[in-house]
Amino acid sequence: MFVNSVIARTGQSWKLWLAIVLMVIGSFAPLWEGFRIDWTLGTILVVVGYAFGVWFITCPSCGNRWFWSAALDATLYGPLFKASACPSCKQDFPSRPG
Ligand SMILES: [Zn+2]
Image 1 (tube, rainbow, N blue to C red):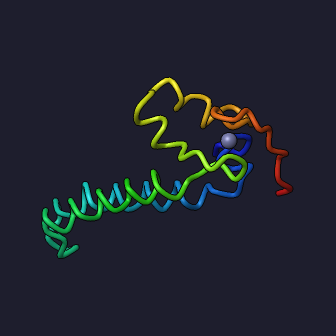
Image 2 (image 1 turned 90 degrees about the vertical axis):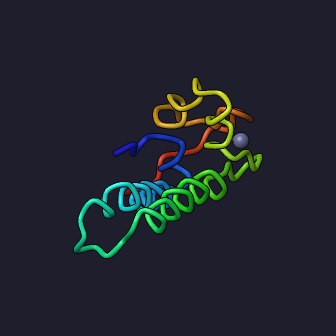
């Protein structure tokens, strides 16, 4: 998934996945008592997951926080998942083996 995106090409897919997993757990785990996660903890997980993705997924070239930029300008989400270049500095990243 997103293998040719600038996120994958800069080796940051795991950060995106971690952010998504935290947000999904925080959103849905409180619905089932078995998880022992209440809405307070769930909300914290969502906020932490979101903040993690926004803060740590950055351009290795110019340091732009891609998801922060995308939060301010939603048209940037497309390029982040499809393009191989940084939407800020236009640095093009080579695809990674594997
Ligand atoms: Zn950049």
